[in-house]
Amino acid sequence: MILEQIIGTGLLLLFLADIFLTVLYARAGTGLLAPRWNRLVWWVLNAFSKLFGRQRGAVLSFAGPLIVILLILFWSLGLIVAVALIVRPELGGAIRPSSGDTPKDFVTALMVAGNSLSIVGSGDYSPHTSGTRILFLLNSLIGASVLSLVLSYLVQVYSGLRERNALSLTVDLMTAGTGDAAEMLARLGPDGDFSDATSELGNLVRPLAMTKEAHHFYPLLFYFRFREPYYSVSRLCFILLDVTTLIETALDTGEHKALIRSAPVESLHRGARLLLETLDRNFPTEGADDPAQAWDRKKSYAAALETLRRAGIRTQPDDARYGERRKRWEPLVRRVAPTLGYRMDEIDCRQAP
Image (cartoon, rainbow, N blue to C red):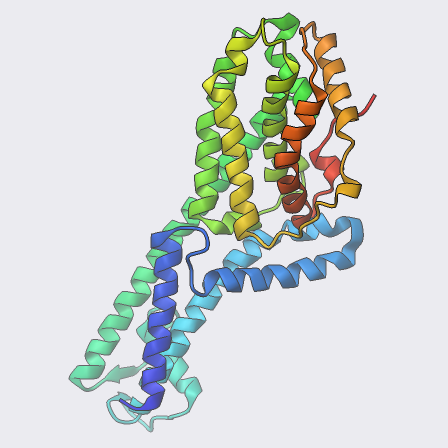
């Protein structure tokens, strides 16, 4: 085995390891090449989108599908180049066509490699030694296996995307399309009746946990951005974090103690924060959490209290506690949201009085 074949073997193993870690091991940040490749493509698209000003979000909405296509091409070309490095020294000897001369250039090697991996069309080059026959057999198994694995992976990615969108739309509908957590809380307890609120919030815990794990298993979901803000993960998490914070700091503790201390409230708060932390840790966020640009939390809290009072809900205001708790999670939203081209007024939709 010459140096070229050693390099080809190493490159083949590297790409197979990357596919294994991305598709089968399936954890955010564990791939060898795919995460870096995806970030590179995202960086290029993100830079290009800034040329379109307020239409930046529309351009970024193509990022997810493009990254999927380019990742498949990246893996396919990587495997073909690796196998081409292995087979090129064998051209004209152990590997040759049924008739005629055998070109020994690298383009021919790429064609033979693609044929043996069953990724591109057929050809008349065939192995003539036991070693090259085994190589072609392994290549065909690798090609077929990788194709089936990638297809199943994409099915899971789009399934996770659909579930994420369904959860986001559900939460938005619970706010009557306003995106305001206070409006959601007011509708959960009309006239102060929160008898069904625990079960309604509990119904959101499982899909939120599934959404969080989908982003942990399939990092490609990070790059899917929709034009409608209510599909934004940032807005979804903001509403859930804000509504649970309002429950803990605005409702009368004597009358609504059961809801305040219920498991769904803590579960939604923790789940939304875990989802944001997963995005912040594994996505190239922009760190846009400048305190000078932060929303006035006191005005936001006052607006929320007014919404609750109009709904006939008894409150026990504690704006200092609300501000303290919100400061713990708001910076996460402010880092994640701008990265996908959303403005904070699309995420935090509450209007000050």
